[in-house]
Length: 171
Image (cartoon, rainbow, N blue to C red; front, side, top):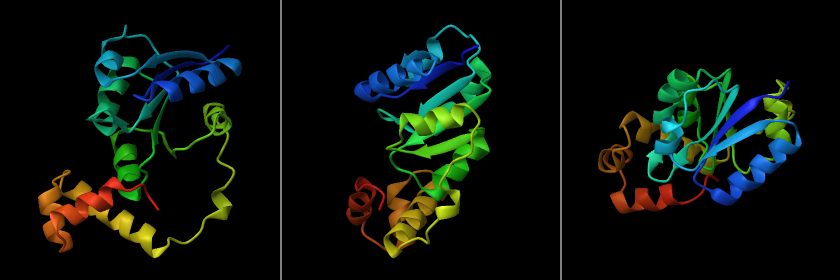
């Protein structure tokens, strides 16, 4: 029996490629490109929900609980291009079962969907200074509920400097 998957991501080309690859591995895939359409679909049971953390201007973490209530998935996996320890912890606290940083291969996703553990856990590296700064900024931002001005004041930097740092990809 194949698993049913709901893929929620605003990147249409990513969804196209990922849904084709998952279907090739025997999964039944439905796709939503925004949070509103994801919550308006028929309330059926999905085995797995793959949820992008940033869906347009919406925060995917805010959708975790409504999606779990509506679809009762066995697994909810958050995908993000902006991975940080703070957002990982927040996603897990809200009910996510896993958290994968983009770019993520379809093979890694298929392994997770089949219940296989990640293969690179024993290859963990210490954080570089840039990564430690990124993690700290995101933890303080999360504590301030996304308030840029308050976070900048707490970090002792100008608001525009903080915005430039946030606009960059994670190191």
